[in-house]
Length: 361
Ligand SMILES: *Cc1c(COP(=O)(O)O)cnc(C)c1O
Image (tube, rainbow, N blue to C red; front, side):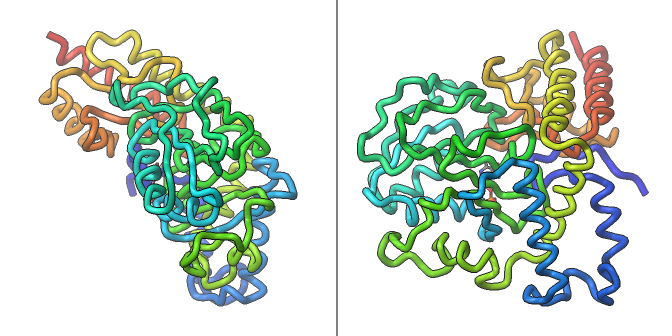
């Protein structure tokens, strides 16, 4: 059996150890005589799985007691609506638009209230993070919204915006658990887990308790109220049981690896290998302003569409898959999430060097 080096932006590579463990437990989970896929979400066995997953996540991210952890469904995209429905008390919010996902979130919020785009990097194809130290934050804004790591464009907020005391809401889908985080700086953080944590189908939302109330916009469906899920410990209805179980295994893997400090050390080391090469290459170059670079998603181009396509094709044949850039950007993108080993990045750079030698005119 051959495993490839998978640079997909999501769903993405998972730790091989986790997949192997899940395979071993597939037919009989710890003497229960059944798969986790087959058991009641109200059973004692499953209750232990979801409780342990939450406890491990709290430990990894150092989540304070006054924050709830919710395991939800509907993808990160459903949060684009749930956030305004639950948090827009004054029907006003400020959005910082640094890419497609933030843009979509802002557009969705417009269905529910007044949205002010207080900063944007659309002028340079989202290739940088704007200065957010002194933004025209609205006095009545219910929250300030960011997408912290821009999966498509490969940028990351290395400094959080100055929200002037307003609640910060962040989509952390593609930087989830990639480095330590100070949860107290946010009112809410959330992410679809299929980028850096687990299988598609699970969204994790971490929300400060005072933001979780019954005071939601009129007509908000029961299933889209944070309070309903918080009061039921994410078991209001059937949760994405199997996905949560895999996330729990990834949390244990991260703890075993040394937690988020160690993950950050590894991610910095891995990204440096790729960025250093891109900075020295005469054929390839990165598309992002260096001070805004993401540790997780690395877009690059040759400047020649045909050569880009040739590279993607030859890379795939050599076992480096999913390197094609997002359809809106073109070129290439290597997503080098937690589960991508350093050897994978080193092998990719060796392959790129060889390609450069063969194709540089
Ligand atoms: C992938 C992604 C989304 C969309 O996720 P879905 O689960 O497909 O809705 C939103 N935000 C970011 C940052 C993403 O990377």
